[in-house]
Amino acid sequence: MPASGVSAAAIAARLSAVGLPTRVEDRACFTSVEAELPESLSTESWREVLEVVAEADRFGLHATSLNGRTLWAVVRKAVPAAGDAGGPGHQR
Image (tube, rainbow, N blue to C red; front, side):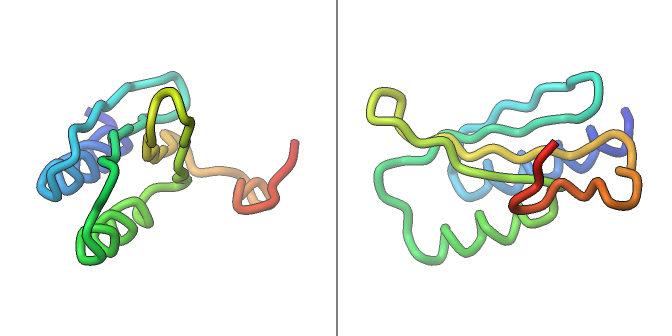
């Protein structure tokens, strides 16, 4: 398993330990982890969730009135080139 898969599996395991159902998908350039968030989550659980996803290369929250809230995290398979960090405000 590539290092990205190991990191993504560790992220998924920690999110599962918080009680969140997770999905892991292997893609061409990255491995992604998604977790459905319940309507309410304790402050302690939110802290743990944020600590966990901070280990990913990118993460975010997708929320809609139809589908609820999905937390996502991405671990890249290759290290990005200098200047291509993809952080907040990154545009291509």
